[in-house]
Length: 149
Ligand SMILES: CC(C)(COP(=O)(O)OP(=O)(O)OC[C@H]1O[C@@H](n2cnc3c(N)ncnc32)[C@H](O)[C@@H]1OP(=O)(O)O)[C@@H](O)C(=O)NCCC(=O)NCCS
Image (cartoon, rainbow, N blue to C red; front, top):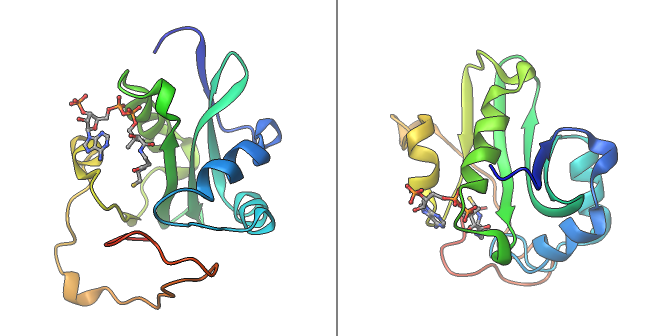
């Protein structure tokens, strides 16, 4: 990773306006309110990607820090893509001391399977054992077709 970039799990550094701006135009959470982003971040293990201190990417894990984690809201801003930053972000997430030895680590993705596969993420061995409750337009705007989350 170029030295101008940094990944940090320090929640106090998060630029919630920047994160909300991206997530509210993402394919999985269009129209998400800022207050919802703020509450989700407050209760997640968050990872910021910074370019000279400006927030250019994000990932968070919903977790009990013992048995289970759910990786969500992974993005890198368009201008910074294609240089391995998402891979560095996922690597940092998986190396975090509070996320070692989890019994199950889940994520959902529309088309970025190839990003996660090298880290060991596989389609569920028994998809029939996974159930969900899901709202199609939780924030009043429909997600893009086939949006997974
Ligand atoms: C997906 C995303 C985070 C990748 O960011 P990035 O910094 O450009 O990714 P990297 O440079 O680290 O490389 C990603 C790797 O995953 C692969 N990949 C697989 N599916 C991909 C996809 N849908 N988009 C981008 N890369 C993808 C790339 O080919 C690359 O592998 P390679 O180095 O072997 O060629 C970025 O494109 C993004 O924010 N997209 C919009 C939001 C999104 O889809 N987030 C993921 C939700 S699960």
